[in-house]
Length: 329
Image (tube, rainbow, N blue to C red):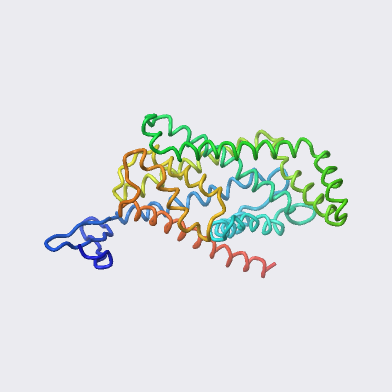
C-alpha cells in the first residue's frame, strides 16, 4: 500500500459524502467517509445545546440577580469558549468575572463569589447526572463485555465519588456557614489578617450563591433544562456517528457523551486536544466497535472539530457583541 498521504480527498456527487481513499496497486480502499448532511445536522444540534446551556443559567442566578437573556448569551458564549480552549479548566473563572458587570442588584452586577458558586453547582450537578447516565447505559451491556473494558466502569465510579463528594462539600459549606467563616478567620487570620478578610468576603459571597439549594422550584428548572440538554447531546453524537458509518446504538452514544464529561474532570491541554477524542472513543468497544480504525479516529476528530468550530464561532461573536454593548454603555 502507498502511505496515507498518498491518498486523495474526494466529494461524492451522488451521496454527498466526504471520503478518504488509499490506493493499492489495482484497487482503492475507502479509509473513511462521512455524509455531509450529518455534519450540518450536528452543528445545528450543537447550536441548540448552546442555547440550552445559556437558558439553564437563569434559574441558577435567579435567587440572587436578574440577568437579561442577551447578557447571559454573550457571557455564556465567551465563557464556554474559554473553558474549551484554556488549559487546566482556567476558563471556568471567565464567566463569573464577566457576570460581575451584569444583572440587576444594588451593587450593579452579580458578585463574583455568588457567580462562581453557581458555576460550581452547575458542574457538580452535571457530573452527578452524567455519572448516573453512564451507569444506566452500562446496565444493558453484558457483564463479560464490561470486564474486558474495566476503565469505563472505573471511570463511572470515580466520577460518582468525585461529584457526589463535591455536592456534600458544597451542602456542608452552605449549612455550616458560620463555622466555615470562623474557621477561615482563625486559621488564615493568624498568618495574614488582611488576606483572611478578603477570603471571608469571597467565601460569604460564594455561600450566598448556593442559596439556590433553598429553592426547589429553581433546582427543578435547572435539572429539567439539564436533562433536555444532555438528551439532545446524545442525539447529536448518535447522528454524527452514523454519518461516519459507525453502527452504534443510542445508549452507546450516551456512553460516549458521559465518558467525555468524566474525562474532562482531569485538567486538560488547550482545546482538550488529544484527551477529547480519547475519552469519546473509550466506550465504543463495549458495542463491538474498534477505536483504532481510521473510521473511528476520523469520527473522533470530526466531533472535536465540529464542537471547536461551533464554540469558537459563538465565542468570537460573543466577544464582539460584548465589546460593542459595553462601548455603547
